[in-house]
Image (cartoon, rainbow, N blue to C red):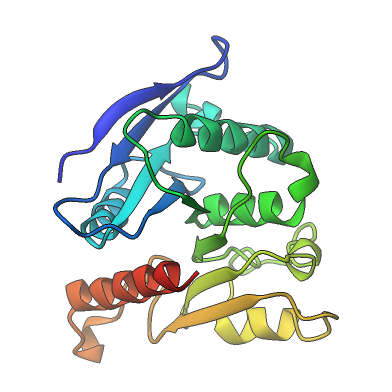
Length: 234
């Protein structure tokens, strides 16, 4: 599947590249997924392209985009408010794209991109003139830095979520596994509508050890099937 490249409008400092992955044939879930990249790679990273193409083949319209720092080829991500603003503009640009007809909106991303999506979902009052999402999907939520102490609060806003959220998390993820996320949310009241899809033996990008005997392509396909099914039920 070949994505259609386009530009998300903004001033010279905020205009960024984006790509549209349209469903093929009759498979249509009437859903748009605005999909943000992680901290260290842009929207055409193989993980991003693979998952965007796979979800499109399952009936989801997908739009990926670069955050401003990535567009300028800087290594250090922008601060959260800049990332959040860029994400909101990406949603507007995706919804208004002439080839996007989906009625339901989903937001999410890989690692940092997924965390920013949960930020947006926790503060819906900051979404003027932007469609409210039907769901949030985080692929590898970065709960804690590997081999380090948790910096900042990456949990409080999760407890405030009212939007259905799916966190896909490898059990070997050095940023925190499914059990650690569950434990971090244990005292939330009321319980946020968060589901966790564990990837047995998966790391931060869901890669499994060769010694497991599992086929890596099949592992990703199973995740993609589960995510598409979750979207279809919203």
